[in-house]
Image (cartoon, rainbow, N blue to C red; front, side, top):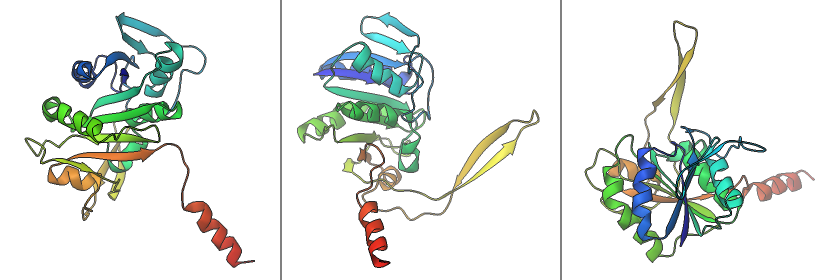
Amino acid sequence: MKILLTNDDGYDAIGIRILQKKLQKYGDVTLVAPHSHMSGASVSRQFWNESKVYKHADKVYSVVGTPADAVHFGIFGLNLAPDLVVSGINCGLNIGIDTIYSGTVGAGMEALKAKVKAVAFSCDWDYFEPAEREFDDVMDFILRYDLLTNKYLLNVNFVTKKFSAAKGILLTDLAFRPMQHYYIEEADGSYKTRRVFLPYDFIPETDLWAAEYGYTSITPLKLGNRTFTGLSEMRKRVNRHE
């Protein structure tokens, strides 16, 4: 299996180096990642016409651009023809509403756009131990049950730092936790953004529930903005008024 490895924390980040080693048993790995930290880039692109690309070693490249740029260059610039794009391991969970901002997830979406299977891995902030210890279990689970597809992204979040080990692997849906946002003005006139999570009843079989109760979650995420119910709902409303 030919694997294109990327992330949004930069080509020399801890998480991607862990994956680079772990993935060797699963296939031929080429690392193509952003040259610098690009968290929160989602599936945005900077590299439309021209950018710098650095080759650091055999099968190790960095791109001055976003995670989506790195994936796009790996597929169409290096002509890798990967069987699988793997993104991560992100330093910080990518669950709930954060998945729409995540560059880790965005890299996987760029792969899906090219009809390449993709999986994104994330861990709790600065807590790579479960990912290092349990990665093979999760990857073997994905392969055993033939979960990889180019129709949706597999978004994997390892167990949080509240737990020394995962209680198991759960297939989950997204959940959205309410939060309050605010800004703090600094002395120099700049602003820092902050958020506070509001009281919330965790919904079973969701990614937030899994994180709260000690499980590794695998959540399918769709590509693009298509809604499977919105069109029919709008047509019903129009028809009711005719």
